[in-house]
Amino acid sequence: MQHRIILPGATTLTRLISEVREKATLRLWNKLALIPSAEQRSQLEMLLGPTDCSRLSLLESLKKGPVTISGPAFNEAIERWKTLNDFGLHAENLSTLPAVRLKNLARYAGMTSVFNIAGMSPQKRMAVLVAFVLAWETLALDDALDVLDAMLAVIIRDARKIGQKNGSAR
Image (cartoon, rainbow, N blue to C red):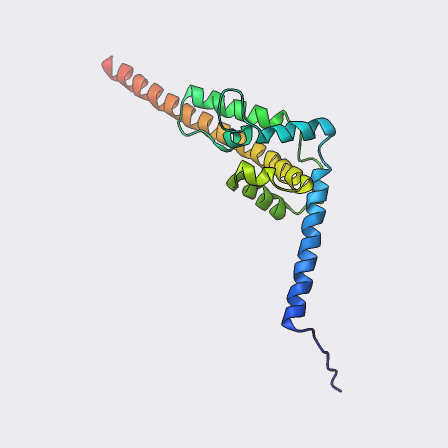
């Protein structure tokens, strides 16, 4: 006995998939936008404005990681992490959110301009800023640890050279 099933056409299926994806995206934005408190929201909005000593916005300056291996670079990396950590957004209850979509949203925030983010709807803008802070806080700490690791490697190498020179001089 044969059963035949009539499937929708490609256009109908494409439209259905895009509607489902759109609803999932809106749910993600809504969940992310509800994470921060009112005070945290105002702090996040300040990411889009210029800083006191620079023409760059705080968001643009937080995107830039360390480029050299030095004590000042390590201090800047730690300050960058502390700035992101001070928002108080922590990834403790994000298990219900799809990690890949959260990472992609944070990556988008890291690539797009502040003007694009500022022009978004309030809910999407807040979701993008929350995703940015959550993801880049971890990246900033990783950057600081990488700089520290490289600095320690240089110090250890130099100490070994000095030890070998002193050992051969005796």
